[in-house]
Length: 319
Image: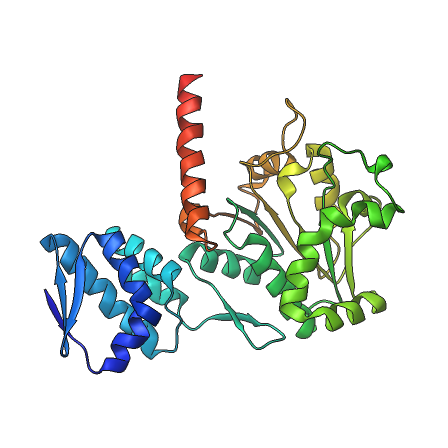
């Protein structure tokens, strides 16, 4: 199969430095791709070659619109093409969720992420369940910062359960803030990247931004706030109910978690798992379930997630 490229710039933009993206396409679609003059030759099984041609044409369209084409985008386009849904990738074009303090655009990279962002925009309570690397926390943080800048809320409240793993809080050095700080570090890291350290410190000093362990939420009513509960799979049903009933007027709440990484004592049910069951049909609540296909970290993370899913499915059948 042959495709005619308009100019060499299209080729260089599509395949990147040292043709690094060519290898991704060849590996994913089991084809050989070469350039002769203005002609792009695709060799391989007819079905695979045609699929490669469709993906390449779509990627060139993405580039013409200013979209970034990297290995993760290429793999996602191939996955959609195999399902006959390549045109659906149009839905994630051009929608900028937020812009970091360094000017980098934060955009959805998968249809699952797009559904998640739309749910956060539309509802007062969104529950996102999915494996590591699907952007659950990061996108929620971005939405929170945007809501604060647009004066839709007056403050941001970030929380997560401080589940002990080998060490008890009482034996850790420092005061309570220093004891729980390691549990909240991933939240700080995401905020630093999105808004910058100086802006973060300014907002925290004014009380506009609060990062606290879940235990500190008891007895409070959180109004005019954008609230994010991270790592919710490690809440107990009692903690989850307590947290969800903190929601006050003009507030939005995002709950994120990965049900494959529950660190609760054996035999304890996850509050997140129960919430998904109890609240699934409640009007006004959006439940988004992300999958391994929505993993946007290193490609190896996606393979690890799928390997564990296959292993756990096999173990379940064995038991």
